[in-house]
Image (tube, rainbow, N blue to C red; front, side):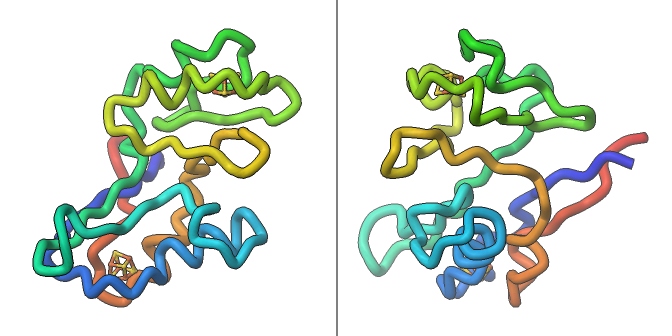
Length: 135
Ligand code: SF4
Ligand code: SF4
């Protein structure tokens, strides 16, 4: 069964950054929030709501289509697989992402969501869920 990360109820977000820390720490072995593939930020000042930006696993992933080297390929069930050894750091994937959720590390490599579900597991408010989709 394929699974997808979904932002279920953004109004419940308390801005604790557990999701970002889980991604940075457990996936990218870093304490820096900039290494997270999921981003939580206010939309316009401290009085505004939290926005949660995460890869939505587009069916025909534009990032993979834009990748000239084959470093990004569609993953069964949605999302993409990234191969560092094929990546030329051109940035095409980030430009093609309609949700603008691809960021880069200090070496210029894209930080790609792996669909591991750690962000959802560590969210105390059930804002993010990792749910089954389709067969
Ligand atoms: S930065 Fe890497 S993954 Fe992204 S489009 Fe370029 S080669 Fe592909
Ligand atoms: S873990 Fe959940 S409540 Fe905390 S910042 Fe992320 S989405 Fe918001």
